[in-house]
Image (tube, rainbow, N blue to C red):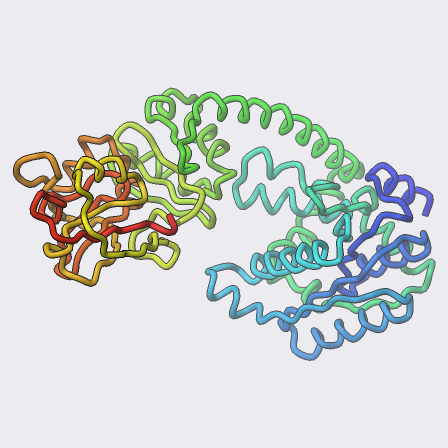
Length: 436
């Protein structure tokens, strides 16, 4: 108990700190809950029923509910169709359960105004994670195991081994539920736990302490490396008014080692190592697009453009078009006033030359318009090129068109002369953009 309390103080956890304890009902989380209860900590309990093990999943939920009632703690329980979620999102069951679990915990933490989510990972879990990441393929960030504090997630048991937790369970005669899948070597973590680690401990009796020191050193190296990456990112990234991130192709070509550095630069935007390899192979293919869970990356002529969401993609549910209103008004005596009135959100047209109703859409291949103030017509793609539109800018640009799909206005930029107000205009339509 004294080591646990000391570690909690080091992690800024005291008896007054409001906590959310993740309790599965297994031995590790039961030991954590027992320690927190007898330390007099202020905590709620959260439990996830993933419905992956039939009656056993419901048994675990009942056990945790009883434990919460026994210790007088508020409990929050989530029910998940984990298999369906995994299938819908192309995830493994383990990844799906992890995503669902931590999203639920964070939701409860915010709702109940709790400071930390406390989970029961211990030293053996950290070592197992090291080897899982090593076998999967990882950068330096994957080689320090599990951090004891990561945002609002805190792991005070990382200084304890699985054996120490087992001893604590026996010493206090604590009841817990056993997950039968822990004994199966179907999962990679269990293969590492049951096969690899016993062999390494046999080869080196000091293996666990050595691994703990090694992961600590790697965490320090990662901190230094991350500072270097952050500095490099600030040097080569620029941001435009839309919040897009631009990195010039010349800067990417100058990176050395290129793949490693670009991976760590793009990692915060959700791109994985395989995608970075594909991005590097496609740098000469203008228009190539790559999607992460949170961003879109487009290769432009002289740069890559990273957008904070997928809203730049045409014809997707996330691509929001502006809304507008119209009203018919008489033309002013002085047509020059039209120029003074027109701005990014207002434009004026000859009502008798407009085919109603109007709508707003995005650019498509072959679009042509007749720019006001110029002779002849112009492909919209040429207009975009002349005005230095990026590929993402082109995809985002809204167009006002009439019932015949004739372009009337490149919204916020230029109108079409075919529907322009002239000296003979009897009435005109004012179009006002209400949301962008």
